[in-house]
Length: 293
Image 1: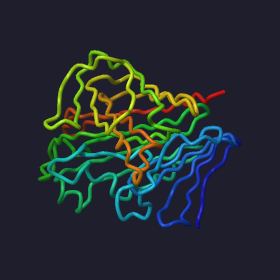
Image 2: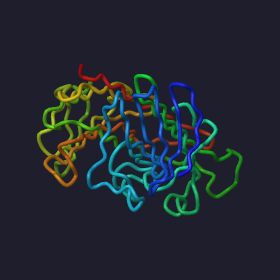
Image 3: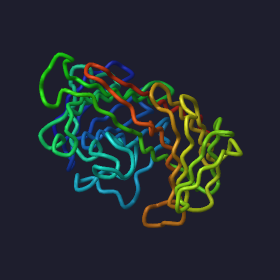
Image 4: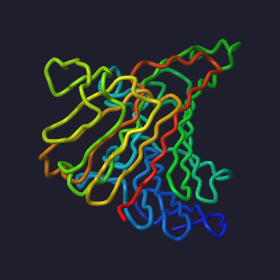
């Protein structure tokens, strides 16, 4: 496979086209690495001092036949079910690598509208995703913009609204032994395992998984949630900018999905965001591992 990159002594970015889908490899300091799949714009690995903090499900497909079930998948321009395909189309398309800014442990990719996306969702848009491998963390920033000129008379020259999330899969030793801790108490909580979904106020700052779980905590971000795993330490999940809500999902007991070895703690914007022509929105996720000594 072809490869390019520019190296400083401590950080590098390179492209690997030897597999079924092109990936971008980021490395830092000889100990840390991350992998970004151009298909879906999905980060599928983040290793800090050799320890993997993300999870890819055992039933995931990495050949482009379906969205990647694992890592940090994009939900855009729709979270969950709705008028277009589940979780939108961003996780199901090839993103384009922007070669110039992609160096020294940084990868910048973009997704723009085309004929196929406009059939599903009739708007002009641009999504840019910057993934940066740093000394103590992995930082990702998603920028969504409405590129239409305000004076344009094009039929697609209009505002649009969207919902979005990173459907983050974090790797754990045993999900039942882990705790998810944040400033959740008193927030509006939606339990989607109930039919109809049940709304209540969260009564604790700590979540433990002991059954099939799908819960939304509204307006608890920007802020920080910690995933505490007795087998490997703590991961600080710091969400800022446009991320507003936390979604916790785990198909507890589902061996085929590998439910024991991951938990989804998703950073989301579930209240529709409106972008008028020329406007943009951005949201940042930082993962800071505190390894068990």
